[in-house]
Length: 423
Image 1 (cartoon, rainbow, N blue to C red):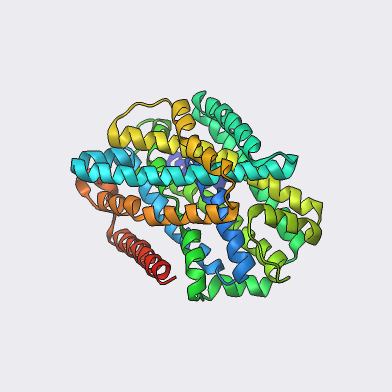
Image 2: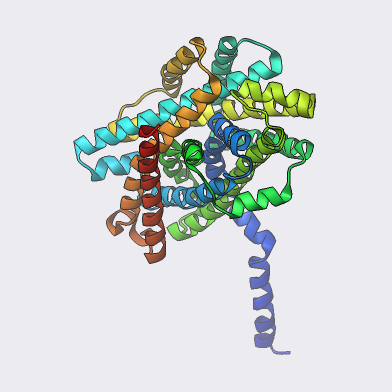
């Protein structure tokens, strides 16, 4: 055998090893994390409220809304990540650079409204989770939640990898709890498939459906994701932006689809436990109290643990997003701990006033849905511009899909306003 023939035989084998599944996994692993941090917001206490309300009031009927929302989230989060990779800027920074001062301030105020609504949902949810598990009052539970959130922020200050590992743990805990809930509640597979694949809605469900979209596609992490991906580029040692983006797409697909499964399991559990029994639910505490006699202590405690993990993790992510928003839009350098302290005050006031938890949480998600276009429209506009994106500018198909998603988001809010005005 000649040396040339030996080389010809070895090169394909070496190339096969280089592109083996294990090698590809090793290449992607260092890039997993940013989308999982963003995904925490997709399973925050606001999602608990809207999904439980949807399942308890309408059974499996609105599962298709979550599927549609997830497809929108996959596209929107990928555009946010791509903007960060291509421009080296966060979405708020890019908006500041390419818009007028009046437009920038208006979009900043909308972003802050999203951050405030998010803080309210996260604090309230975590406090309810702590109340369920430890029997504390809602306000003391909220204060303890505040203290723990400062501790989680301290972990984030010590490095991205430690914080992302902590977020992985929180997501795993939430997922495991709802696996337990589904196993105990014994839902209808036929009902799940029909609700997921056959779109159906009536006017009384529009408010909750829009809240589900607002809870699933979160405006504050649309801003955040563009910043989370940037420090990963140095791992490639000078590799192309396209190579970076391809790896981030794997992260986004795993994280967003995982969040979709968890959200769907909330609706399924509420439908199997409450809707099928004809039991009305008027609050998250009510849901927990009803779960206990229906499905046992295990289901109630799993619900409380998931809610607490959701609130603690998402409150920290919300604070990070808020800091990126004010820094990018206004170039104000604010300590993340000071930001956490300021934004928790409205939430603590609402909790102290003793408002209905489920109503408050659903209303906060509707606010998020109304604010969503103010994040999505600039994102699509910027990622369609070659002077901003370079080689990662949206192609024809992505541009078409992005415009359609934008139209859906805007139309959804018009429908919400009409339905609300009509009572």
